[in-house]
Length: 261
Image 1 (cartoon, helix red, strand yellow):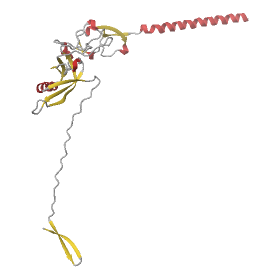
Image 2 (cartoon, one colour; image 1 turned 180 degrees about the vertical axis):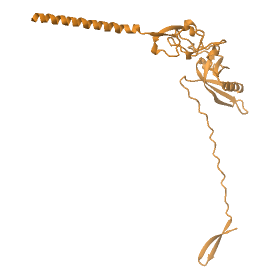
Image 3 (spheres, helix red, strand yellow; image 1 turned 90 degrees about the horizontal axis):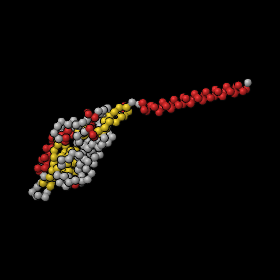
Image 4 (tube, one colour; image 1 turned 60 degrees about the horizontal axis):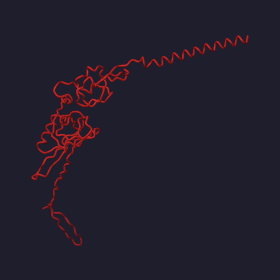
């Protein structure tokens, strides 16, 4: 009797062990198979660094698979959608090429496609000093400082910050910021509004201009100086007495009274 009970318990334990092992195996297989079965979405990413102002070609792009919940709404899903467009800013390898990063190319130069709406591209002549010793690159932001002579002497100049936080579109005939060493250039193209362009052209005719390179994180602007008007003091009106004092002596009493004249 004891031997039969032992055999039954042994067989029961063996069956339970086999069942537990089978359940664990199925759980592990399903666990490892889940990532492979997860559905993804193909998006267009940069195959290499695409500089600002470059016209995109199929060799600049590739497809990458990403989880659907991580794909931005403005991402492109086909390379054909981007061929012939122009990069609005530098796109780095592996970065998703989104709609805000490119602009349609309507013919002419690629530079015209990267100019913001309502803006104009205006070129100013520079030298090694005005051009910040060759450290200017497309995509930089600059201030424009104007200096013009005043008075009778030729050495008297008045300077002021004419324009602030202006985007550099190109240096010479280059609209790409690929260079890593300073290069002396002869012309810099700036992105300006119509009013700003008028101010710049006038300043170049009246005197000289200097470009000041800004930190890319600095978006502050010069506070307009408010002239403090000197308070006008009202003239003090002098009041002259129209009466004459009269001293009256009565015995030991002395009194003074005013008599109007």
